[in-house]
Image (cartoon, rainbow, N blue to C red; front, side, top):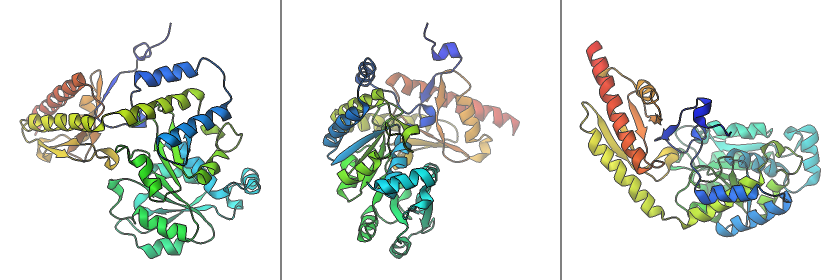
Length: 382
């Protein structure tokens, strides 16, 4: 008998938060599941499969080359390793035997405003991160000054939420390429729009990394590296099935075929209709929650990671006596758990992106009830 979540005592989650790894990424459509199942029924030469799937993905995404990885973080890992060695097998051998510090180029440049929890993958590759700018601003000359002979690449983290204190990608590409330094774009959660699959490389980025298990609705353990033929070949040198530093991050045949099916399906999707549904639900929530005492529901045009999908921010005055943490705990007390995100001490984010129509109603009812109960409880205690 195959165990289920219920058998294991694991509660089901209604995800009104975002396509987070901690919540399982996203839900795969049936064609993706079928592609994975079919892939699991026979053996295959993994080098041959990777070449074939990658060629098809490159064509679909209007890029010279592609590479499937087991997640966006794995994509950043092989991109970093590749930037240090290029296609030079002598440098590869030195890396494998002595580590990144034995290479002439072993440092990577990042905006301080772009430092995120995921950039530790660069230090995992053995690189040293060189910061430019500060949390408020970055000047072009700071990037120019940082580009010495030890720099293997410049990383640009895409997303409107990180743009204010950083140089634009166009500026980064111009300066970096002027010193023959490649540019890697971390665009893990930067879909939609679909044009982002080719926009960053059209702007001159050498490598762009996306998550396969978020907006694309592919396997959670999948990622997509896109870029020039030359730059992607650097990544291939380190990636599984080679027995090199990318081996612990290997991707299976099922994930390769699943991601291909997901990208094909996603490119055919009516993204305008999806956005319209999310907007309609969000506006309906804003109207409904405005009836709660003290509540300040607002429509926000951008979602998690600055993505162009709306969500609602539900705030309330501190005088009501309860916090966003207590609100999140209340929504997790029943089954299924309703997951939302904290948006400050007295506010939460709620997103309709991943919800079915039935779940939209459940979320509305559960949030409304939890807010009212907490307001009554703490109102009596104040």
